[in-house]
Picture (cartoon, rainbow, N blue to C red):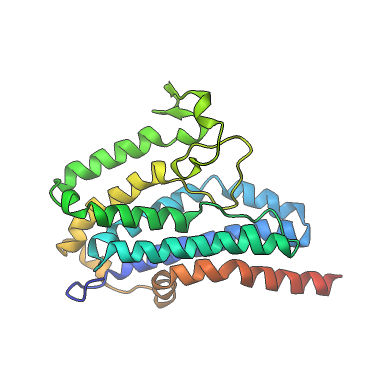
Length: 252
């Protein structure tokens, strides 16, 4: 954040809560993968219903913070590079060691990195748009494109051609074949519009017009996790694998 702005601690706390929920969610998947307990998959699948809510909040806050960033493009390049490193580890190195099924080709870091770069490049134009109009249009576009991955627009009222879903090179845009798999997958469309929604709402943060309670710290732990969400994301799976493999060794 720019040094001339007060830190909005509640944004850190919400982001921290969202990333913790993600870690818990992934833990149940890893319980199924590593320990072989079927109930892990069952709990993981059940939690998938609420998962989009937490990620929407995470991406929305990232969009808000981009309005306060000193250099959104630089941040985006760093986050995208971290996403590419995750792809290298999960899709290249881990299969060489015999671990498959965890490949991430375009996950949350890839998506956020692209969103930050695009927002940073077009920030001079975006700043000229009335933030209320921009927020409403962004929300409508997010809803309009939400089902693009399953071949529809506007809640299925518009059906896209099947020929658009024959190949995987457009997976970053939400268009991919039925055989495409990424353990963590967030397409730029529709999520960039949620990011834009956050960017426009961020005008209130930039003008320091958010409710006063949002500037107060309520949980040091959640605030810490939120500030370090990138590193928590990068570290959580290796840590979970080590813990669960140790548990499997003890059980065996």
